[in-house]
Length: 109
Image (cartoon, rainbow, N blue to C red):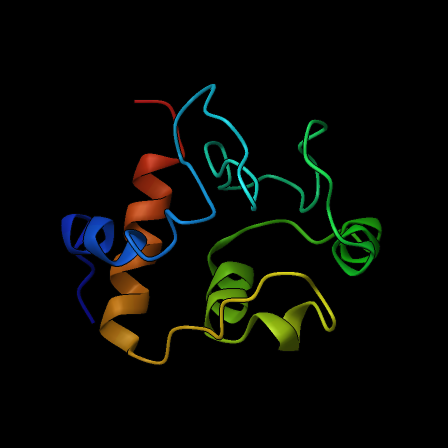
C-alpha cells in the first residue's frame, strides 16, 4: 500500500492537540515528536512520561516503523495503562500515510 506523507500531515492534525513535531518545539500534553524516528521511548528529558511508558523505555522500546505501527493502531496494547488517551487509527491507509509523515517530519531536512 502506497504511503503519502502529505496526506499523513492531514492525519497528524488530530495529534496536534497534544503533540508538536518541530525541532526545538515545545512539549504539550504529549511530548514533541521531532526526532521520534529511531529514538528510544520515553527519552525526552523535559517531558514527564507515565510510569508504564517509563517501564517500556526501560525494556528498550525504540520507535521504529513496526513499533510505531503497533502503538498508533492500539496504544493500550503496546503500553498498557499508558496515559495517551488516543484510541488508535483503524484505517490502514491513514496509518501508512501518518507513518510516512512522521518519518519525514521528525528527521532533519
